[in-house]
Image (cartoon, rainbow, N blue to C red):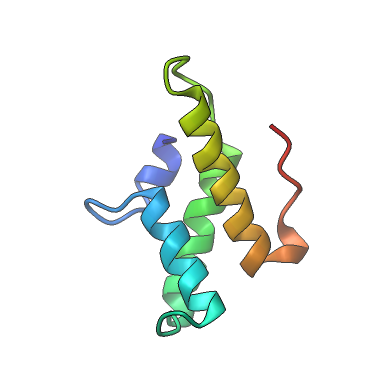
Length: 87
């Protein structure tokens, strides 16, 4: 996980948590996020994909899946500003 996104996150929060929370709020499977929390989540995800670097060969498939999930979440809630994910 990029340091640049980590410093924007709450303690014990993960990118997976942010993706799930944002997705569930967007689809209506949970209560909607307040505008401030939604904007923070989008900022964290954008920052993560912008600064993403593959660091471990051992976990490359998992890391690629997390990166793809970040892109998918952004595309769901912010289509106009999200580039296509290309592994």
